Picture 1: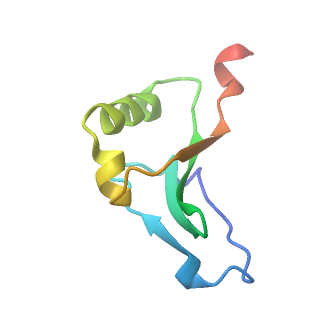
Picture 2: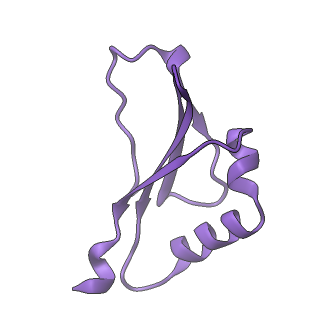
Length: 88
């Protein structure tokens, strides 16, 4: 079941962004936005309370440098999503 999605407004042309392939995860989605000041990677995370599978994948992608390779740049990134589950 997909639990992480990004809805892109149709006014933002398809040449202004691209989806990044995230292996083996329906809980993590990522895009790169092309802006005048440079590219920005946006990541959306659904973090299930019962296990750490998604967080483990994020740590692995960051540790291996694969997030940089996916976006093909060393651009800034913004992480968003449901991180409050561990604080309830």
